[in-house]
Image 1 (cartoon, rainbow, N blue to C red):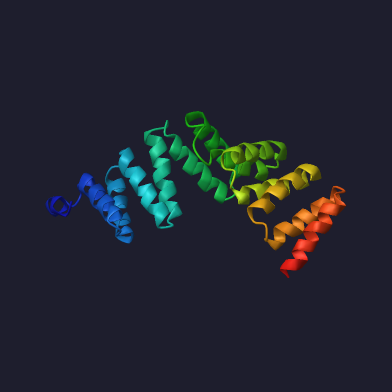
Image 2: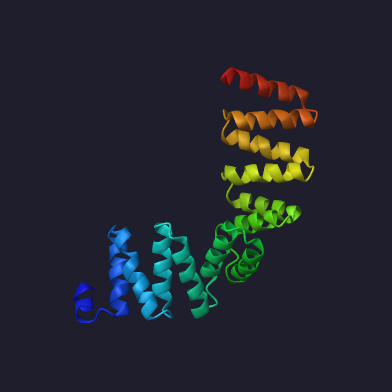
Length: 212
């Protein structure tokens, strides 16, 4: 790549190769500049855009990654991964209506993409569509049974939806994943008493006291 660039510094293929080679060999910090330059020279090459987005994400350069993903869907509007990444970026910014539209496109193109059910649930939750969010989180957890963070979110949504019995069932599963977590035990105890499971609540409190 360097020999090619010595002949022609504006060879987008050589810039792409240089950036990809640096990234693959662990020189990530030096990989982005040639890739961005390659994108400036020719923003219609999907592989260049995809590589640039991945390297930018690794470096925490979200604005560069998003620009590459958006250029990519202009080149290939059937790229479901690019639409998913755009939706995720919009959701992180709090632009949930825009994220919903991008995610709908991603779902049409690749409905089995890992993480897509969680992201859709998160978007629905923040749009106030709690029943839909609950179902999406549950579908996500059918596949990712060990995702404790999402299960905690589900407990919170069930409480907000005035479904304490369902919330208690999910809180128990959170507790099973981390049986000595004080916050999880406190929530379980609270839900046990709310749902008239007094003996269970007493047992959980006894365990909580034994920890501290």
